[in-house]
Image 1 (cartoon, helix red, strand yellow):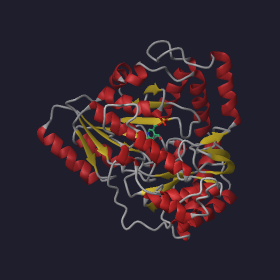
Image 2: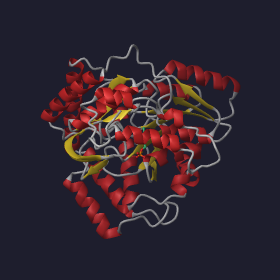
Image 3: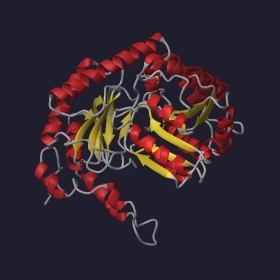
Image 4: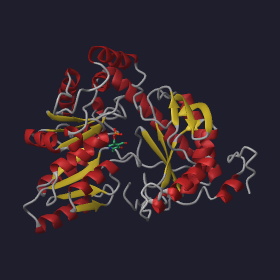
Length: 452
Ligand SMILES: Cc1ncc(COP(=O)(O)O)c(C=O)c1O
């Protein structure tokens, strides 16, 4: 029994933590509460979250004080603010603190004010958003660009605008929630393929085309999967789409700008510049702002997205400050300075992965801004995350619905400005925390369920 009058330190009292029940359960259990009272039937979920928070294993909705820099101050739910090494935010090229980006944002604020005047279809466009559309089109070699208020809105909006009930979607089993929810909202004909498995995609496309030659098929994948740090074979997927009369959509939220030649991400690395049917992205990882976009070569597709994507038509457009911030970030991304920042980022990724592997931990995927460290059980991930927070190393412990049940991991997101000393120190502390929490290696990493 816990003594409520004595501050409970779960890092010092693992037995009490285990006995508390805070390491048990998962969010899937609470997804469909029953009863007529919509406002109170989530009480069991609320109690479970509160139990975890009381025991220091609720690492969500923490508060970042100041910018998302490698050294950051973070306050937790019930935890005092702590300054430490930050691997829990996504500013891969460290542009959020770049003086030229701040200056561009301030200039736009002075010139055009703090908000957009309406949806992009009404009077929400600004000279900054127009320039941004042009710059993105040029970067990607795809001239038809539609902007969205968030990356999530771009994914959901584009899929629901283009695909209707008689069409089909073939989607990677680990695709982001925005893509899967867009697919589910667009059509009941959604087929999920095994992660990165092009043979399975071919099988599904052949089966669809054998019975339906009349309707469209959208194949949906990501450039860099953000929980697994791996990538599909884009030339093969695009080839299969041509063969079966399907259209390929690639979400490059995490890799565009942060990786690849000229910042072109996995599309550039796989020599598919200008050759993917639909490219979708978010500004929230590398471009120091909120917002998203869809790009393609076909004007009819752009028109269809503008007119039928709810979050483009019925939500206020990017603010001038956001658009100017992304524009300036894009300028840096495509400059020599951008190349240097990407080299620093990749050096950090390679170094961190080598140190963690040397300590016996299993990092999923390949070197990228994201380093997912396998934990397996949710309890292990919760304890490791909590121990790291006590050591002032901030990481995101990820469990269902971010990843399948039983496939929990620590996700570390790197920045160009993490120093080699910070990477070394963090690697040692991650290895120590994972060891104390009981992390092992996966028997075989076979992702089972889609991300929520
Ligand atoms: C692959 C992918 N697509 C889209 C999004 C949504 O982007 P945003 O957070 O900018 O809305 C995310 C967010 O993490 C993502 O990982």
